[in-house]
Amino acid sequence: MLPTVPSTSALPRMVLVSGDEELLVSRGVREVVHAARIHDPQVEIVDRAPGEFTESDVVDLTSASMFGELRVVVVRGAQELADDLREALLAYISRPLDDVVLVVVHSGAARNRKLVDVMKAAGATVVPAARITRPRDRHDFVSAEVRRLGGQISTGAVKSLVDAVGGDLRELAAVCEQMVTDSGGTVDEGLVAKYHRGRAEATGFAVADAAIAGDLPQALTVLRQTLANGVPPVLVVSAMTTGVRDLARVAAASGGSTWELARSLGMPDWKVERSQRAARGWSDEGLAHAMRVISAADAAVKGGAVDPVYGLERLVTQIVSARGRTGGARR
Image (cartoon, rainbow, N blue to C red; front, side, top):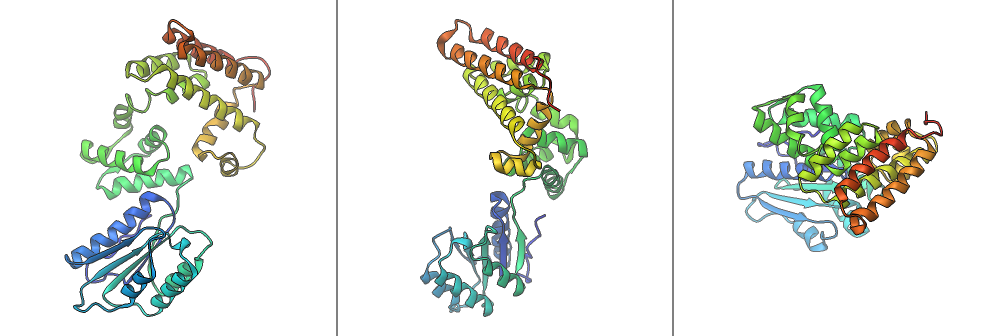
């Protein structure tokens, strides 16, 4: 997924980091800088954020170093460069200097795409950093991340980990590192379950997921864990509201692939998939009733009830009951 940038005398003169996945972009740039520092501990690093690359930087880039020291010049947000700066970079790419490593970060957008094409044609090292959206790709990322850290992980553990953490690559990477360190290298489903028992399951969203799925014992158990961990009742109701609204939006959406629905609804693909599965057990009447009881519970936990904990337990029971209301389950 992420090629290793040469770290010895084979330093590339040009590197293209292509994509807008923040973790992969930052890691790609960091590996180039690390390799350059191994090659020359006194290397000069010029790292320009989007919009900060200027004409003076172009002059410095195209000027040979007086003493031949190595320089790394990072141009981020290349898709936003003004035309004159883009043309200056294109001119440099045709005549790169031996003592400069040019790193261009381009999001993959159509604007200034010529930079991408010309760098590839010139033989630049390409570091893919496209945003990961498909569940299969997230699974592949976790597997590759654990291997990169010197560990191994079972297929079941990969799925459990992604289900528990979600789609944020930074969090997935951090959890992979922690679990490889704690386990000595072998990550299995039991370790994932133990690691996330009090973290991923005992949240308001986990309460909502269990209730929406119709699992009353699990929903009540996780609700008590959540409250014991200090989560305010109002956040549990908020999570329940979000879960049922997402369910209703997906259930009402017209046909199309998961990815098309995710784009049109502005939701992560994994959340659309989960809502699609859950919607099969719900009718329109049940969804309408669920929204009404959530609204009443929201008022209760914000001061309208003497015992908000009792109100939450009653809400969970009502949501599970709403799932089975007449009207015909969706197929």
